[in-house]
Image (cartoon, rainbow, N blue to C red; front, side, top):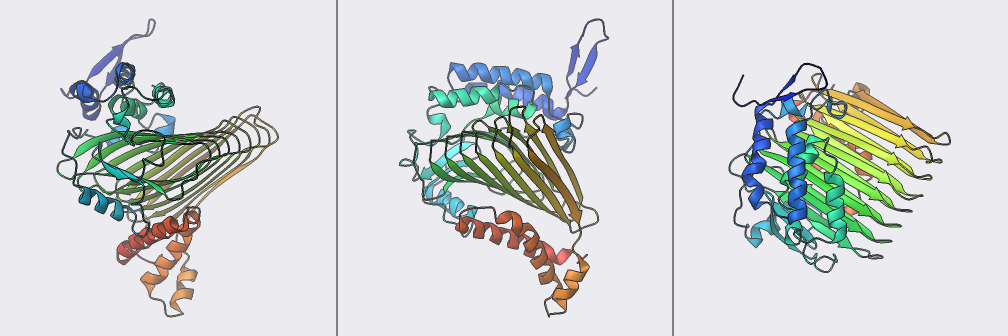
Length: 463
């Protein structure tokens, strides 16, 4: 047996001992907590939570294909090695931070209100002092004695110790961004959360964000994870508490690269008459997993997800969500569009749960893939778990190649092959991008999609 493996022996009743082999990555991650614990932020309450989470990960390990929610994204296989955690480093110069923000989403001005994190450390920000009720945007600034709602949110999510990825996040997060939007406040400019890296060696980064939006408030949140300049293993969690009557648009952009892994999770709780409209875009050839867990806590609320995946090379992009209709009279919509080239793989797992008392629920989901290569793969697993009888719920999933007749039609009108293909792909994914708001951000996302298509088109066939 390799010395990089652990053997954990458990006895259950009179059954024979069970030996659980730990991979090299699992061993390194379990050992990492002891190495970095002293420099992690947080008071006694958080230190106890971290230790419990570290113990949970030691017991659970990384999720694998035998875990139903991870059957298409076998993290134990995908993460052969665990990168060392990014050490403390000097903050980048303000000019470098501003350039990073400008380049995060070209065409959308995100410089008015932003906070930037580089390799798990606060790097700078602007314009958030007058937006949030908290004294500062970085979580580490007040995590020793946090507001009650932040302590409750971190503790509540951290209590789900059966998920190894979530346990790791609770045990090891170093920094994050916290916002508290007052009741009735309408934020006119998008608020940007920018995550980048400082290059150098391969590193692991763990962050957590906490956002509370008060009753009747309005917020556009743009969460950008820039393409790493050096391999990165990222574990990030964003928690959202959306008050009664609040409206939140949440744009998440992940630019991936080969050799990197992005494990992202969003947990949102909606009050009554609330609206949560997330849009997620993934572009590149790395491994990306985006989890969403949405719970309706009040009646007459809406959840409307748009997602666009542009994946090439040996990239792997997974969207897994659980929408919990716990109360009556709520609406949920999910539209996922995937464009797959080369040997890329996309996964969609969408579970909609309708509780016994959640009558008048309206839930629909659709996942579609456009295959630009015979070697690409799309796995779709929509689920409806309904315990009420007065509901309207449905789901669908399709995959196809580009229609050669449409290509012929465009080429017969003098449009070159590559441009014709790009037009059709842009039209396909544009239906999801249409869900993004505001228009400036939507236009910038379209520009990113065009750039990906233009860069990749020369190496592809028409059909």
